[in-house]
Amino acid sequence: MGASMTMQKGTNVAVPAQAVRVELGWHTSPGTPDVDASALLLVAGKVRSDADFVFYNQPAHGSGAVRHEGKRTAGGAVTDSLSVDFGRIEPAIDRVVIAASADGGTFGRVTGLHVRILDAANGAEIARFDSADASVETAFILGELYLRQGAWKFRAVGQGYDTGLAGLATDFGISVDEPQQAPPASQPQRTPQPARPQQAPPPPVAPQPPAPPVAPPAPPVVQAVRLTKVTLTKEAPSVSLSKQGGTSGALRVNLNWEVRKQFKGWGAKLGRAVAMHADLDLDLCALYELTDGSKGVVQALGNAFGSLRQPPYIHLDGDDRTGAVSTGENLTVNLDHKNRLRRVLIFVTIYEGARSFADLHATVTLQPQNGAAIDFSLDECTVPSTVCALALLTSDGNDLTVQREARYLVPQRGVSPQRTIDAAYGWGMNWTPGRK
Image (tube, rainbow, N blue to C red; front, side):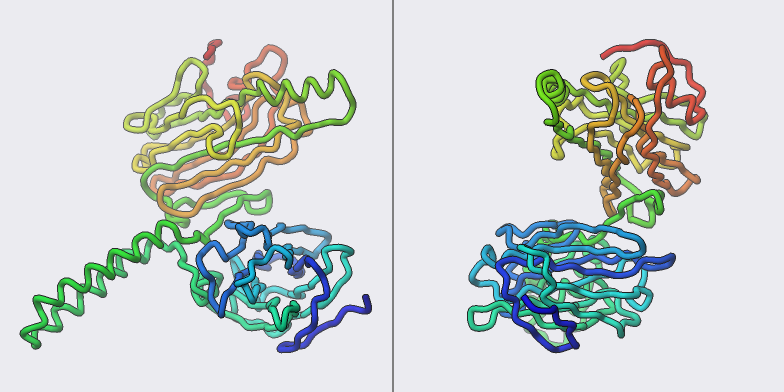
């Protein structure tokens, strides 16, 4: 294949490949918003359903044709990639829009924004489009892959939106989950009715039409795609729950994990890995301190499962040994009583089945009943740790702040994991041996 083509806005180029990697790239520096790649699979200019939208919260299309591959950082450059397999695109789909959204600022603050189309088979660059004229936009259509006379082509678009990913998605027929907008939607339909009394016959008929329009929008709100995301990192480790809409109801904390299967070597090594996978038992726990000064722990050990309706307003679900995403270990905090909480430290211990967290890949998700989910991954464990501080919730009397800890601790010989984490965070409790 010859040299790649750097494109001007509005131009197109043939894509002679069975599958491509679509790579969005930009430079990162202090103050640069996070950028996310997404794709919309269209039939006659619109999606068929919300399932035709591929992005960070919905990373794979049902057909397997388009996948969100995730980000990579090297030096001061970041890429977010999508894979597109033309052989798996359903016959009805005639266009795949390639978009970018800015999280935490406008594209005017993003330098070096570009999209590259690479042949998935050999990595050769087929086309490149550099976007250089952004200002107030928070979402951008960088380009589109489209079908013309049985062959796929790529067109450089460079069209921006100042309404973010939600505005772009809605434009193509996606129903976006914005719970706060549900109540206002029903009120405008009631206000026009008092304005119709001048027409004497219609008033009896008028109350009936509003009822059907109010009912149908309800299901899409439940099933619509949720665009909000809060991923805590070392660089941005904390978030206010109220800023995410999580001010009341239940806050569900989930820990799920998978064992990194290690098949290097034979015999005992392999046997140990399989045994660990089968018998691993992690326990999600919480240390709490209430505003009245009382302190305690919620954990399976000693059957201290807590309570949602009375202090400590924290409850631990049953024990799970699989780490499955659908279950895992779950703990719930009652945010209706958040003004009674001073601080809550959520942590995990290895009860049995492993000597440390070294071979585990774990993800923590905090899902408020109202508001955006907050998640983070644990760093790779490089110490012989059996207890890990996950997140610290602290209250200022009105709002709870969630802080990512991801801190592995190594208990001294003869010291329990609970006593170890107590000492690290200065909780000051008396511990006695317990079992479950």
